Image: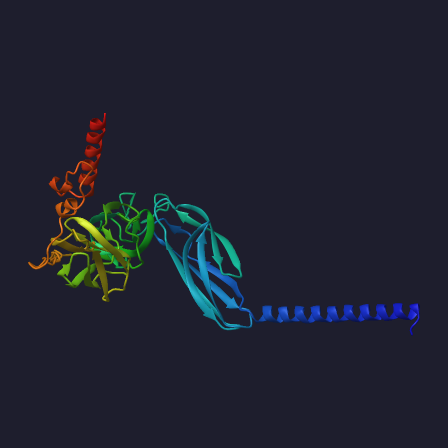
Length: 410
């Protein structure tokens, strides 16, 4: 048997071995974490180039070079910000060691003039620089473009002559805006024409116009729009702006009634069934209530929701009562369609009373007078003279006889 000192040595040895095992396990786990981290994609920003400074109304272009310094292929979003406002982004996929340059743009607008913090960003890296957007009134646009006459600097002025829009359109359709622009100035120049929806710039194009020239340009916005939030369109040049209403229609489900079948006529007290086949000719699948209305009263409803160009069959019911017989003016209704009909609930059949058996001529029917004739009272008078009104009449008669006997005895 080991001594106390030997037991202590054994315990200490076991603790040392356990500690070494834990340390080795932690080191292996750390190595695995490091390896996993090394294997992940890592998108690093190598360079940013812009065309700044630009004049308000012109397009700011930024070229961002990104390299995947990780060991796995990955996909990330590369975004371009001015201060805290995201202006554009693009999604890129890069293998290990690969790099690419993406061009992101922002159509500057009136009021953007000033100095901004330009930020290029991926999920793993951020790079910033300062850029300037100049005020059109201070930038000397048009200077030298058309020369000078009598010491006056020539200037191009882009005025909006007309605007046409392809509305009304659905929320998921393209908004097409045609703008007629005239250069009413005395210099040839390129300037930006852009469109805003609720004060947010959505697209634009650059127009080249000689002095006195007019052009019609088309600007398209192909992103989904919210009909509840968008109603104002603004067309803008550095020198002019026109505001107008634009009609955006929401996407809806249109449930049309294709056919209606019933089990009418039914007997009062039975269940009346109305089977309806519906189709969706709208833009989206959306929940909608279908109702069965009889004589202006809603008897049953159900909710349907199915896809565009699909059909569905539902059954509406009315539990008739014994008193609800007759003809009903009925309608099956959706938000967009209705089908009318006449439904009949038939009156229940009248019950025939059960016939009672008549006594035959050979059988004598006993009467109260017969029984009374055999039961004379104390005075020798027969109860047979009393009408045959049954037990109650007999009791009254007995009570009267008793009172008469009492008087006589008195």
